[in-house]
Image (cartoon, rainbow, N blue to C red):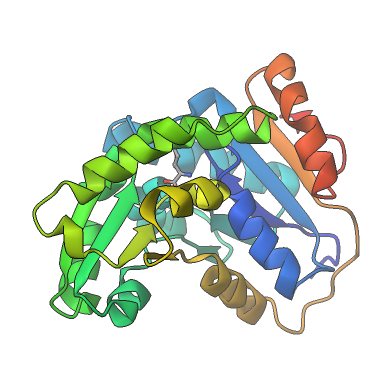
Length: 263
Ligand code: DGL
């Protein structure tokens, strides 16, 4: 194992930074290459075929170029659609990010759980299966909130989070039958924990959020246990254009990343 071989983290944008942050907490010394597919953002309004082709193609190209030791698809949309296909095409371990329905169902006392994700994620049979197998009979209220993906992206570019947009998304989730009893919400999009303050303000202090970041970080730590790590600042690469990327540079630098680059 080459000690400099990175752990590759892929998302459509900066949502996967929530996984990256959790990973740094358990593996601060691991070399990380974060890839944001800004040219493909948002994934949530694309078809299953488009997302699968894009993610398999990108990860294939990145694996050849950067020789990662492991890939993490830090995106619920891409994982619920393409995880098994990616595992078929890559020769390295692949960790996915799927909605944390199991811990949310275990934590809920009212038995009503919200699921905030992208339109593509909430319609996946993968989500139906997670709910059937691990939902403990809970009522699962699904709501697609693509505007929150854009709000989270904007917040990393230093723009203010529009509280009314967040409040409107939460109101639509809660307006579904049974929503008044919802006590737990699965943040089924890696972008959404970036808005946790605004989401908590909109939902009220009695509603708890669940996301998979800490569990994914632990899984990556397990899969890389005993491997040598060459310490280096995390790298950030992106598809898209240089002007867009430059707007994220201050937030990335504050998180310890080396200056971002296009690939
Ligand atoms: N961060 C991604 C997720 O977890 C999706 C955002 C997008 O629509 O591109 O689902």
